[in-house]
Length: 87
Image (cartoon, rainbow, N blue to C red; front, side, top):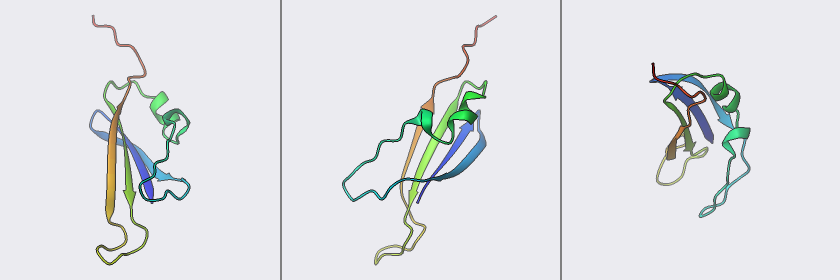
C-alpha cells in the first residue's frame, strides 16, 4: 500500500493513498508529481518549504513481519510555488 502526505512549514496539509499497479520486486514505477493527487494542494500554497513524503507498507503478513510494516519511505522537497522577493 502506497500513501502520501504533503507538509509545509512543519504542518501536515494533506494525505491519501496512491492507486498504483502491482510493482514486482527489484522493479520501479515512476509517478509524475504534477499529475499526483497532491498537485492542486501544492499549487495553492505560498509556503517556501514544502515536502512530499511517500510511504510503502506491506498489505499482507509475511514470515518475517506483520501486515502494515513500512518497507520504504521517500521524502522530496517540492519547489516553492511563488517567488518571494525580499524587502
